[in-house]
Amino acid sequence: MSRLDDIRATSSWQDLFEGQPQHLGFAVMLSAGAMSLLVSPQDAPRLLGLSSTGWATLSIALAVVHQIIVALVFRLQLHRNLLSRWLGDRDMVVWRLIFMPLLVARPLSLIMAAWADTTAITNYRAPEILFGTVLLAASVWALHSVIVHFTILRALGGDHFRDEIAALPLVSEGVFKYTSNGMYGVAFLGLWGIALLFGSWNALVLALFQHCYIWVHMYCTESPDMRWIYSKP
Image (cartoon, rainbow, N blue to C red; front, side):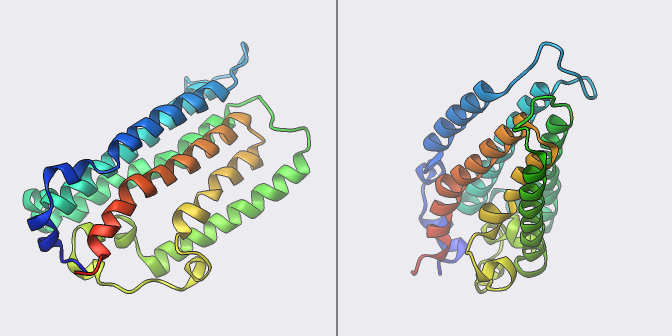
């Protein structure tokens, strides 16, 4: 395993941008595609001042801001130790205060878009509710596995901050017994579940966008970082 100090001693400024042009390109294309699929009836109701389309647009913007901030912090921390140099032992505390509200805003804004939506997915509510419940239950199980087995520190990208976190063994309990990426593969199914339970077309579009976009983060930001952190010296 590469020690973080060794990574910072050998990487260049160019390495900070690995995968990020692709990230920005996918962000633009996915956002435009999602926006084109949203439906806004002329008599659309408003919830806290925003229509369903307004909440959906806000949700897309928050997701993009969230993942751009994560990419910036991960790369600057991994290659330049920026947060730790600025904040010392408070680095991960501050990072949690930035990361968690943006993460929570993703399902909350989707719920608001669904709540204000009057455009149905189908006219078959029973199957929607059934499938939505199953997907939401799977998501809750995955989130429980993340909290209990994987831990929040690792989910925050703690392996970019601490050698001891990077040295922790792979998790094979809970959802991670069946998949190596329970967070992106299973936990994000909860967004689909929420959309189906509400029967909301716009929320379904958001679920598709958010699930696709989190995999952009995985392949454009996390995968290159993992090669640096976990490659054999």
